Length: 422
Ligand SMILES: Cc1ncc(COP(=O)(O)O)c(C=O)c1O
Ligand SMILES: Nc1ccccc1C(=O)C[C@H](N)C(=O)O
Image 1 (cartoon, rainbow, N blue to C red):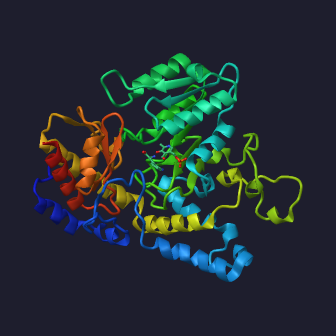
Image 2 (tube, protein in one colour; image 1 turned 180 degrees about the vertical axis):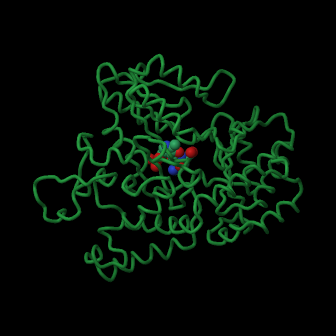
Image 3 (cartoon, rainbow, N blue to C red; image 1 turned 90 degrees about the vertical axis):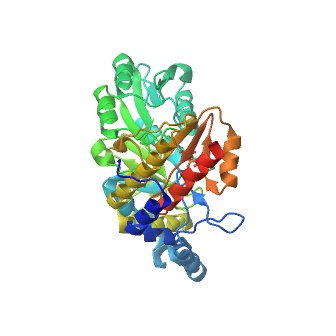
């Protein structure tokens, strides 16, 4: 990656040669108080709004206004089947087969639904293994499942910790934990791309390890979907969940995605929670008494979904289908590599990138640890028109998103960081 160059001329040149550069114009870029576009580096928290989203939502508002209830069957995109318009493109984003994917609910709700089916503790095998610096909500969720089944999280929660003095989790340690406690662990649940360090885990390796010891394996892909190339099907994972408001740009609190491996598609012993949307589509409205489970991930749906939110997801997925994850991740690796190069060139002893330098082990986010810094630094960056985020105790996360961030953005970001740090 030494072919990167210093100086703004290089950034300009890279933007001119970037085949995806025009996509930036298809997003609303927020402006600062002087009317200047901000340097938006928080697509890992909330993705920007595609300009097309309004039209996709307006279509549904119009159909609702004009058709009322008949919109369920007569809207341009009939609401009864609306989630199906998302499935194929979403499956491509996460490397899955359509039968393995459904858009429904929100991330944490889906995580619990998955644990209803894939965390079935016994007195001997009841523990849950999770990475130590998992997103707190994920920890709360698994701890509550332990308690729900009558176990004490202090005993039941097994943490995959980074070694002393290191930030990243090490696979040898995972193996050691599983060797020692594998037959007591019911579920391995890992944040596929860690929210704090940006470490992108090897799904296949973790899944094979977990399965070797008889554990179920699931991933939270909140920071993976639309960011890195996922191969959920080939990884062999039992389940995965993710949100669509980060890299999938579908708006605050929008619906989540859920993956259940094909081998479970017809398994009716998984104790799924049911609702009418998990019932056979052909007979759903016959209102029969007996329940007829839909096969595949769709069989975990409960309710008829919010169409307005799904319209925003459709707007975003149509763009992802147009670009494809291949081109997107190619640019992403180069853009974030450039970011890393500029940071390293600063040669500032008070900062350290804690995200892996190996391109296969990270997505677009770099997490920068700043010695002795506090939230003030983050305020200064924000004042300077740089939207990044601060994660306690001492990390600034910046995620140059290949769909809408430019090389110029990255150049200016590092320039501002340098100014403020010195
Ligand atoms: C890794 C991870 N898990 C869970 C969540 C929470 O998801 P939600 O609020 O959509 O349930 C987030 C982000 O908000 C996240 O980054
Ligand atoms: N949904 C949110 C609502 C409010 C504030 C933050 C979030 C985030 O998504 C945070 C993100 N999960 C993170 O990795 O920090």
